[in-house]
Image 1: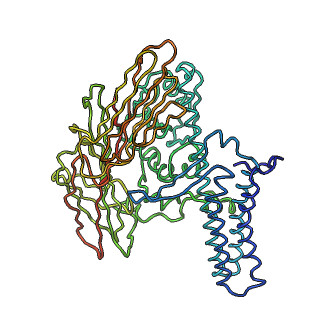
Image 2 (image 1 turned 90 degrees about the horizontal axis):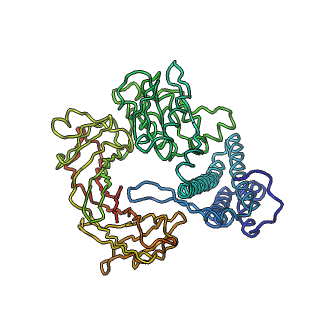
Image 3 (image 1 turned 30 degrees about the vertical axis):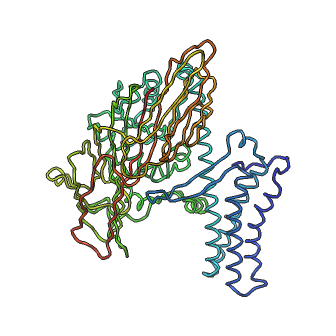
Length: 586
């Protein structure tokens, strides 16, 4: 958003700009002036809210797309979670957006929200609770658009950065890239009385750039003066160091917990989110570790201690000058024997939902032989139960599980003795355990690529079908692969779904569901560089799919019991399998 003085150029979409401002001004003007002409609160409420709703719809569906090239919406996915969806124009079209249109869009969006906040303060001072309700509804609609378009703008920037990174990586050699790599330390937190010099970061990045990929994958690194622990999430490296002997898994686990908490708090994990919420990140680190020892790492307790970021808290911090988000009172659970659970929650309806979410990792070589096939799964629980419930969860076939990892609430002895999960759950959603199921015999779908090249051209034929029917619908099937660098152009079509070739030479084939009457097939030709007769570098095909209601590992939940069953308890179970790292080599 550019809040500087708009350029002298004319508006490119004057009619859209007019309606973008019209309903905002109409709602504010009617609310302010209505007292002079009406003495009926119902009329004032209905007309004001109607105008605000019209403004919400126009901004969200019309002026946002035309004036700034952005569109957002929110939907509920198959797991019952609220998911933000964003759309934006391509980079060339965004660059051609009229600066004056964009300036008007963002300024009026923020000024209208500020105006409603001011009116709300006046209603609060005059103790007019009914008019405060009108202001609250209008302010909610205005803030919804601000949050939606702000998130959409950040998502567009993220896509631009990813596209630029991929383009540079494909055209710049590794030597030049290493010579001009720039690394920024976004945040530094000294956790003990002994200060660690930042030069250790310079040493780490020098090694990171100069050495091969094996260094980047090492979670524990020994430098001349320190032991380093590294965890990489979404392109951000979390680095911790120590000068004393300590269990390495504790350092790695703590960094993973920090990354999970930040992702949960900020709604994602990227450079912009961390910089925009610098104070909250620093406060979280203060509570999560004390003098070098992990302290409070449970998200539910941290939410009671430090309020998650939102627009209202940011506005209040600007108005009051108080940027702290730390609560004045200590959560009761911090002194409890179950610090991961809030103290004595109460619900009218008690429910607990258990989800088996699995990802299939598979590698198929160019001869069609299954080299690797295993499942990484998670048991996710969403619990809203009054009091302090004690639950036990058992599986019908726990012997197939390996590499299990538990939430701190799980008692280890019952699992070790009888393969039963006994736990007091946190309040809300959490990951109860993760596991692996190794050496699966087959995959639910097959992908058969065939590439033949001769005389400077390469013929491509890819078939996709169902190998083992899991008994449930397989949908969201996709196949993508990177075109070799020696390909000048490609003409690829399919009889099912759509085929798109991106600017970075990534081919994306979206199939969706496999029809019963025909087998999906992608075919076409690719033109090689001048002087090349045959293709010497063959692509790897990455496959995606989703199956609702099935755990491909064969894991089955036997029963879920509560020692003390509250009134009106509802229990639900679901399963979902999707593709993880599913690769087919050609």
